[in-house]
Amino acid sequence: MDIKKLSTEGRNPQTMNLDEMTAEEIVKVMNSEDQKVALAVKKQLPQISIAANKIAESFKKGGRLFYTGAGTSGRLGVLDAAECVPTFGTEPEMVQGLIAGGSKAMTVAVEGAEDSVSEGADDLKAHDLNKNDVVVGIAASGRTPYVVGGLDYANSIGAETVALSCNDGSEISQHAKVAIEVVVGPEILSGSTRLKSGTAQKMVLNMLSTVAMVRIGKTYGNLMVDVKPTNQKLVQRSINIIGEVTGVDETVALNTLKKADYSVKDAIVMIATETDKPAAQEKLRQAGGFVRQAIK
Image (tube, rainbow, N blue to C red; front, top):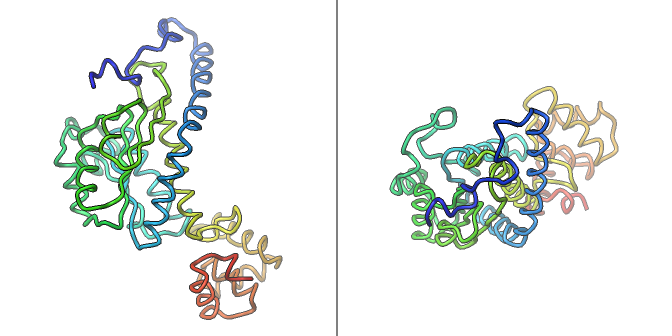
């Protein structure tokens, strides 16, 4: 598709005189445009749900989730992957973000990296992608060669593939089994897809990872029971979660958390079922990792 025909490259009629606007006028129009993002995401909820379920099923089979993208899209994928570790207690390998140009592209532009189809495939090969994995290709324009290459390789080995773009009928949609097209319209600064498009992508990635983690037992109600208490704030949050679920005071919660080697899940089951850590772990294993089933 001709880049001129992409909605993400169009000129926004509300900001044709952007350079003449006051700061207050600019932030008002930005806020107004941003309100359109959630509505655009809403239209894609059925597709997002399908993708999230596929990711959850992959996790249940021991598969992994790979985000792949360039520029802002790639950085958003890396960010979401990194946040899964402290939030859901996952191993870093479970959710990974790959960005065209490698890790240095997180902070500086790597010119031309996104134009390589082969690099998109090679990066996934380097991580031994297999048929149990899911690859989510992210590109606001919907035409990034690096993403196309990654999706094509994933398809060739039987992995699940998802395309996330911000244009109707995008090219990457044709290279994935599930297509999510969140059309937010022209940016207030033409072509600057770190704005509405980036916000839309962040919202969708939040949904994909959160829903998938909930579906495999990483939460109890709306509590993050697999949180890793790696600092004082998270230790206190863990104590609060244990108390919220079991009704014990902070002292008992902390003592049990220590006996559970700082596993919030184990501590909850230990208290709720009056068992030791090995017995709690066995109950969780039998419950598929779901705390609610383990403490029934």
